[in-house]
Image (cartoon, rainbow, N blue to C red; front, side, top):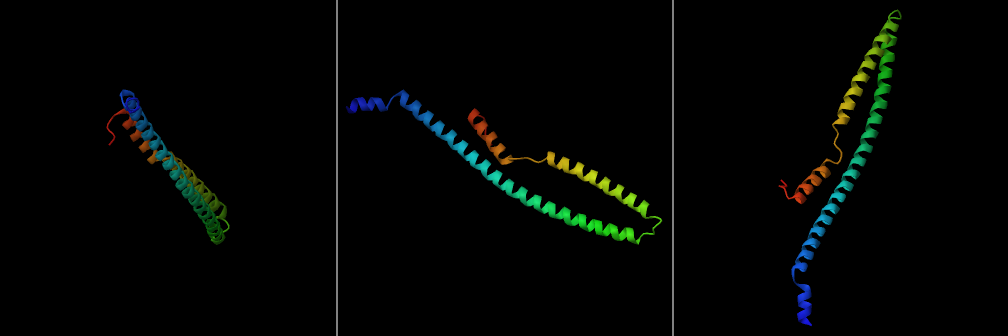
Length: 135
């Protein structure tokens, strides 16, 4: 009985199955680690995004009210004959600044990388599985 049990547990098939199990365990471990990394990055990104949106909203609200009050004060101090021209120049300047701000925001948004650490780790994993150098 020990002889047949011993031959059943050894041999070329046993080594191959062991190797396949180890490879599967490594791949599953890598996938689990990457999924956890994605989850952590998404949680951090969502929390940061909410904070930034709240801060931006409040900043824009206060800046808008401050600018309106300041402009009302300036227009009130200007001679009535020049008020229309001053309003037109101010409106044109503010619209030009808004266009520049929108262009800057779009350029900045294009440079934003999402899940950068996860992409790097997945690239390292792919190189390891292909058998290439990993560092």
